[in-house]
Image (cartoon, rainbow, N blue to C red; front, top):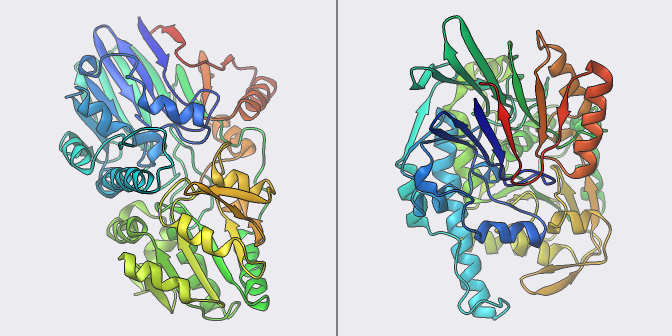
Length: 464
C-alpha cells in the first residue's frame, strides 16, 4: 500500500506539492511556491507539513516557480535527497531559482527602504546562496530514462508539452508480474503550439493526478497570432507603447517567435522590441541550446539558419540602467517583461509608468491567478497597488487566452481519451474551485471515471 497526501495546488493554481509514501520511501512530486491571494502566499512561510529531512527524493515536473520555487527553502530546512527532473528543467532552474531568490531579496530591501512591510526588518523567504546550494542536489535525466529509486520503484519523465523540459511523472511500483502505476500530469500542454512538441500519451495508469487550470474554459482565441497582430497595429495607431507582462520561460519565447513571423510576413511594422527581464534573456539562450526538445517546424527553421527568437529590432535589457532607459520610449514600441502575473520583478516599474496613460496598452497573454495584480488589472479595477501605492489604470487592457501553455477543458478530455483504460482514481488539482469542479463533472459525464477533488492536507491510501 501507499499514501498520497496533497500539500498544495488544492483550490488554487499554485503551490504544487504532492507527497507519495511507498513502504518507507517518501517521494515529493513538485515543490512550488504559493502565489496569488495573501492567505495562499502566507503558506510559504509555514513549516513544511512533514520534516524535510524525512523526504528521500524530489521529482520535478517543470521549472515554473509554482512547481519549483519552494525548493531552496525545503533544502535549507533539511531536505538532503536527490532532485530529479529533465535536463532542460535543470538548466531553467539554474536561472529561475536564483532569480526568484534575488527578487525576494530585492523586495525585502525595497520594503525596508519604503517602510511598507509590517515585518521589521522584512526578510526574503530564501537567499541566492540558498538557491545555489539547492541546485547541487539536482540530478537531471533525459525523457524516457528509467530511474530506479529502489528495485521496485521506477520513475520516468515523459514530455508534457507545457514549457521546455516539462514532463509528466510516470511512477511504476512493483516488479515483473505485478506492477502498478501513478502518473502526475504536472501542467499539461496543448497541441499545435509554436516551438514545443505535443504532450505524449501514457498507458496502463492506475492513479492519475491531473491539473485543471482551464477545466471550465475553452481557449477563445483560435488564432492568437492574428489577435497579436491586431493589438500591435492598434497600439501603433494610438501612439502608445504595448506592454506585455509575460512569463520569462515559455511565453516570452513564443511572443518573440510570433513577432518575428509577423514582421517577416509584412503584417506589422518593424518596431523596437525590448526584453526587460534578465531571466527571460537567459531562458531564451537555453531554448536555443535545447533544439531536440522543440517541434519539427522549429528544428527545420533553425537548420535553415533562422534565428527564430529574434525580431529585427530586438533590444536586450539586462542591466538596471538599460531597463530605466526604456522609460524614455513614448510610442511605437513593444516591452516584454516578467513576471507574467505582475507579482514582482521589473514589470512593476513599467506598469507604474504606463498604466496611467490611455495611449498605452497592457496585454496579458497568460493565466492571471486570483489575488494577483494581473487579475486586478484584467478585472477592470480603476487602480492597482504597486510598491505600496495605488496606481490609476487608464491604459487599454487586452488579453489573448490562446497563448496559454495549459490545455483547456476539451484538450484535457482529448488527452484522457487516449488512455487505454480508466484510472481507478483521477485526482484533480492545480485549479481554482470552479475550474476543478467543472472538469470533474466533464470527466464523469464523458468517461464515467471516478474523480476526486482533494483538499489541502488530505491523504488517500493507494494500492501501489
